[in-house]
Amino acid sequence: MRRRVLVVLMIYSTIVVLALSVPLAVLVGRERAQRFGENRAAAATFFAELSSREDESGVPRLRESVQRYDNLYDEGIAVLDRTGRARASSGLDLERPDVQQAIAGALRNQRGDVPSHVLPWSQSSVLIAAPVGGGTQVDGAVIIDASTATARQDVAVAWSIITVGALLILATVAAIAAALSRWVVRPLTALSTRVHSFGDTFHDRLPVEAAPSTTRAASVGPPEVRELSSAFDAMARDVEAATTAQRRLVADTAHALRNPLAALRIRLDVLGMRVPDAATESHLRTTAEVDRLSAVVDDLLVLAAAEMPTRQDTTGCDVGATIVDRVEFWSSTIAVAGIDAQVEEPDDADNHVAALPEDDLIRILDALLSNTTKYAGTGSVVQIGHRASEDGITIWVSDTGPGVPADELPMIADRFFRASSAQGAGTGLGLAIVHALTERAGGHLQVSVRRPSGLRIELRLPRIVS
Image (cartoon, rainbow, N blue to C red; front, side, top):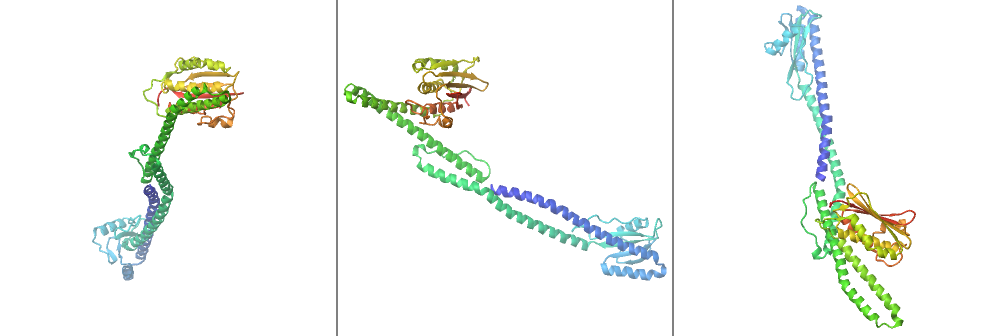
């Protein structure tokens, strides 16, 4: 990733530097060509005016001026009359085709073209032509074979300076980009190292049978991102393996305790027939404690099963029929608790949900109705209902009991948590089981306060398995 960041920054910087340097170099060539053309045009105009002022007696002086110009600038020059005959010439071959063409144009009152720009590889000389005379009358012509060596050298020097400056800018940008890319990538590298360190330590502490598979999915992207992605995949497998091992430990422990507790309960029942009256109360307390432990063990086994992945071939269940069946099953217990149960049936006949097996919905309703009979209190009203929508079904159970304090609602589905308003026996695992079964089906559990008092529990379940 560092290399990619550096390449991107350098490409962008190179484009910016080129966008500034190339127009500047072109501007230098045009400016130097303009000065070159102005100087040579002024020289041609000078000799044209000098020729127009000199008669035949002044030709020697004209030839002397032409000779001096040639010696000074090493540029061939010729001054001609209107017939094309040379009045003065030095260093210029008048028989050259291009010279003849320039002479013909000048005698037609046409000035020679001056180059619009000068490049280091431009031609070595340019013919500058100027007519002699004024207005429409042409009395002759001045031809200068102007050398572009100095102009080309000036442009080459200017371009060299621009190039060196651009390279210095790119070098500075490269140093800044290297530092910036290192600064950007350093957190990823450090995070990857920490994840690897955590994963190695975590993996060493896992049991051999819980160790994650070494097969990794192919990662894409820069090397640092691929390394971090692989490290996160390994850590996720480690955490999943540890969670699986924890669930297995809970299930195995609960299963191992179940039979001894059952045997202990039988022995307590047998012993109860021989317990003297003075020890009857202690015997009853011991029996109640064993029953509470047995209930905890049973709930732990159910919770462990609820946290395991569900089968993908489940046929689902009819929510309405299952609700009616479980309310009828709990009707006697609800009546003994002094609670009025009301079942709300929706108008929609499509109550089937494929994402939740019927056994899981039975466990959910049993846990919710069990909590209601324990904590709602005598004289309260409990409402059980459901409603269907296009993407799922919502099931709710609400009561008018004492409810749960608002600050304890976020913890109500935690394992072994019991609200401060809860009275009577309980394991604190009922809503944890409901939450696990709901999430396994791809649903969502929401617990809220019912006004003016009571508790409302909603389960939103998808219709199909995700």
